[in-house]
Amino acid sequence: MPRIALALTEEFGDWEPAVLTAMARGYFGVDIVTASPDGAAVTSMGGLNVTPDMAYDELDPETVHALVIPGGLIWEKGNAPDLTDLVHRFRAQHRVVAGICAAASALAGTGVLNTVSHTGNSLESHSKYEEYQGREHYLDQPQAVSDKGVVTAPGSSPVTFATEVLKALDLWGPEAEAELGVFAAEHLPPKQ
Image (cartoon, rainbow, N blue to C red):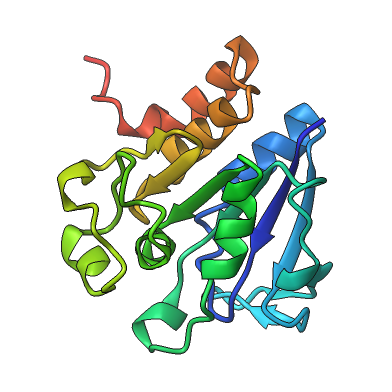
């Protein structure tokens, strides 16, 4: 069974991975592990206190199949950890790497978006990173994008983010589609 690691930071956007982790763990039995830069406790934007399972350096791409990075205020404040080594360790093992909201821009800063289709909060936020050379691959859309094992999404898209990560892990099927359809139903036009 696949294993997903959440790379958490102080003031992470707690809603951004919530649909994914609830679906993966609750319906498919996926093991979810959490990590912070040094293994110390973090507090989310919403005030949830999380004691991670480990530090980033302890995450092993041999046993973890997807690295999921929620966004959060830490990037706006300029205090975010450098994720370059962590992300490249996972990509070197052909593992799924996923970033939502400001974390999609953090992925831009690692250079992994330079050759894959991607999205995020804005092209402008990605372009703040000098390592980012992927402008021609940016898709300005509200839904998540998945390409070659890299998943990105704006912060307003936790449902399509969950969908694309599940697909990248080969967990997509009728059950996942039905369950995630419930979360996405509010975005459909009202029935007349």
